[in-house]
Length: 82
Image (tube, rainbow, N blue to C red):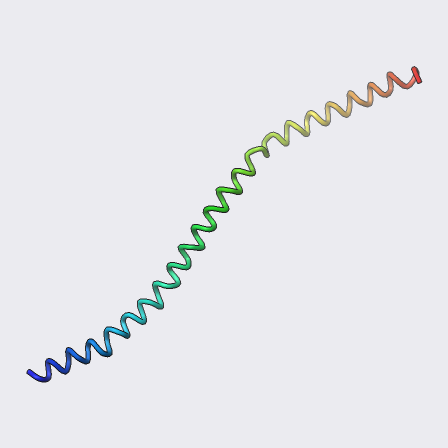
């Protein structure tokens, strides 16, 4: 019977702290990875909000090209007046 008490005490004094130490070494990096993932998600959403006007760049490029041609025509038409 006393051997059972010694085994229980040994279990509480040695095995449980070792298990807690090993669990801590696994859980701490997992929590850190979760924080990094949440940070990446937050900044990714912010980035997509800034990319909403990008499709309008193609329309702006087309309008600038059209304006360039019209401006050249206007200058050529106004040149004889000067």
